[in-house]
Length: 511
Image (cartoon, rainbow, N blue to C red; front, side, top):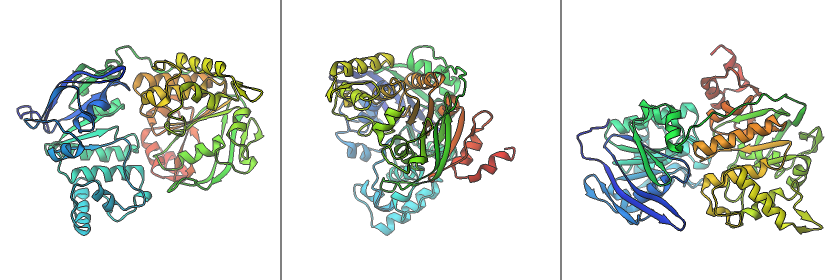
């Protein structure tokens, strides 16, 4: 619980940080009191990550002062920040899958105690904070939610004064989110300050006491989230009025993608194999597939994109058997795919946007002639995508890795949607993307469906799926529930489906 008379836990003033071509933080200042849960809100590229890296000692600010618990604070590296009492749970976990929980926790400590003692402390702390964890389990066998617990327990063992959480719920089921929030409220009641970054505005409204809103590196507002609607918060972040995506009722046409009894051995270490997955998607239909990370989403994308092949008749595109075709032939047949991992899988980070546009656009956009690349055509295609999707970039010839995550995401989704596909498969279309960009991507997906494409959207963001999908299924441990209409589904039913209530009887008992 926040104590207004206590000196601030963290006090920032005049923090600025410039990178070539961009002022990431521009004279930023705010305070977080002991026991306060404080939200840091802003679009991608607003400067949130840079600011958090400064507080955690990963980046040095160009100007400005920080005070922590009443003392000057200028950590040279993360170990200095941790020693002072700052702990951070990152959006992307840094765990070793082939080690157990206790070994992973020990690796994150400056001087770990003996293993048996550490295991006992992990048990005690995890029970005290309602995040039960078995120290001897292999991390490779844990769900995404359990892996996050490992990171949180690792932080709590340092007894932090300030806990920084970056997008902590993007990998959790609704039930796991509740558990996490209980833990955070308990920490707050004990006087731990929490700095909380999330794009999920309803979450911020229920959890946070205060919020600082950044836009293009500057603080543009502070508020009490409980007193604002989610839309008001989003509009403060964007500095404009937002409209929800418009669904144009398209006619559902014939089936364009049919998957029958698809079982695939996972090619990914510690991956999840697919077990007799079956569904159909019609022209104009958006099928939303939910599930917590690590339940076979990546494998499903690989099997649909053609990166993993199966018997011919397991996957049919436009009625033709395509299970044995590779990615190039599936594109020719009309199917495009955008995987979740944008660095390395969806894009070649060191190649330019033009080269990345060519990599998947060559066939459908006819970018080769007699075995030679049509670079002018590839550049025109890249420029079209940049324009259509408002991609903020100095130009088409910069390397993919130079774009912010949200802008690269817009480019990669646009590159697929602009190829007039008949079937679209996307994993995590708006992963780590701000409200305005996410709305634009969702609208673009709906527009393609209205034009007659069949769409499969795999996402961990339930609100997103409920907003754009016509039918809905859950992937759990490699099995897919029977798709059903989205209309009338409640978050509670979905949570039960995600937690593995198979056969879907649960949902029909009038919950």
